[in-house]
Image 1 (tube, helix red, strand yellow):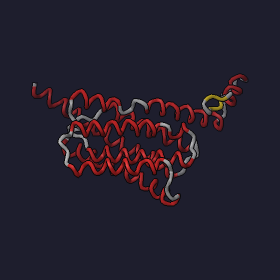
Image 2 (cartoon, rainbow, N blue to C red; image 1 turned 120 degrees about the vertical axis):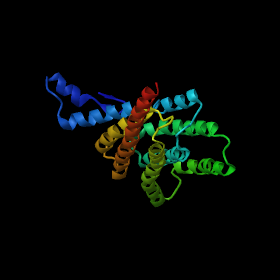
Image 3 (spheres, one colour; image 1 turned 90 degrees about the vertical axis):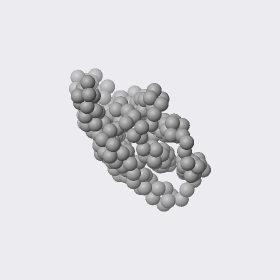
Length: 235
């Protein structure tokens, strides 16, 4: 019995005989199911952040460069996974995250007006290069190097935001729900990537996401508690 590439026959066969499925049967099944759960959740993961900006009409405390680099990172990661022929359950969320990240950057641009003319070079350059990368029409060696740099891109996408939070002692308009979903998704993706026997670079990228997303999430919890205490004192 197979559905969406998930083979349930092993588990169902064991249960029919009144036995618990073996580890070698259960772990791949859990991995596939969790993979599709991540893909499903990714369709709305950035929606809370988008709605928060629209509600407050403010991008206070948000790092524009950080969100731009995130778009670049998602583009490279998606292109690499497509090029490697990994199952959709192992990377499907990247497509939805990329679309939402582009929308989010566009909203940040809108509420950051006026923007210097030089700032528009980055999105124009992205529009010119992204289609070629997504189509995989680049040298394989360069593709590997590009994917390896993707980890650094995601790291540098988070560092400006982490530093801004630390400097301001506030997380501004960052959405707790979006950051929490990013953190939880990174943890699950480490497990599913290992089960799907994804390249080590893919697993390391997910592990890096756990560390950086966890740092931002902890900052939100810490600084929001401090802000709540200040408001109580002011009252």
